[in-house]
Image (cartoon, rainbow, N blue to C red; front, side):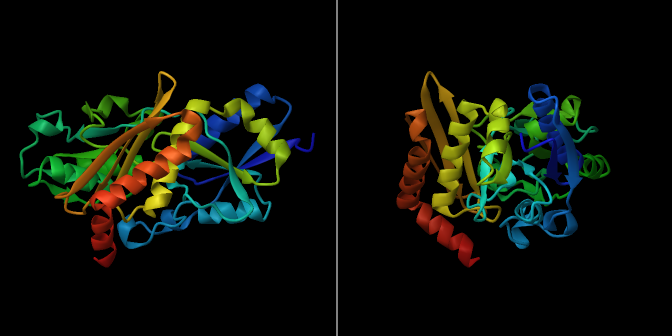
Length: 312
């Protein structure tokens, strides 16, 4: 075996380190003889904290520097939140494994001094914080009078900002909140018929060099087939629409009774226009399913929505 030591590239946030440590622990269960080390790498997204994500671009914002380390062989694999990983990877890199995903949904965190515990009870002119255009769009479609506060930073920072603010609450991904032990702060798990999650939300993407056949074999024990089918469908959907952080796009694919069921959405920045569609098919045809739904939404009004966003 070539590997006696594996170096995992990761961001340095608490959540990123949790994810990398989880992968390390799982790999050590199946390959106890391999020593595994973490290499913390600061990305562009970690350095620029005073601007909305939609204003600073989205191509590899949280991954580019880690991918460079991977290509330079300073690390052997990278652990990403799959929703941060661009749908077109650099030449020479591939996704080596996608483990079983956590709950895909978003959650509402109410301000601790407010009496309401779900979004329906928030006053129509309430203040809700989120750094996501996808969430903003769907929130405004649900409750058009809301004031949306832009929010960046790690989870600890976001909770501190909420607690010291006059906001009514904030929206976060369920998976991250659970992984870092903040489940007691969740006041509502938001159903997907209200807010569709981001592409790949709740899943990890383990990136490796394309030629590294041995490492791909080592990672096989981590692969979830159902999550992989779902994630590949969602990523194909996003790739076809050429979307990213600057476009409100939501997607949720899952395997139910041996079928891949997929819901997708495209929305305007102000939430006034939302197109949603559903499709199902054979899980093995996941990427074709994602492409088909993307083309259907694009042709039924999505083109105009996307063009208006890119002009703005």
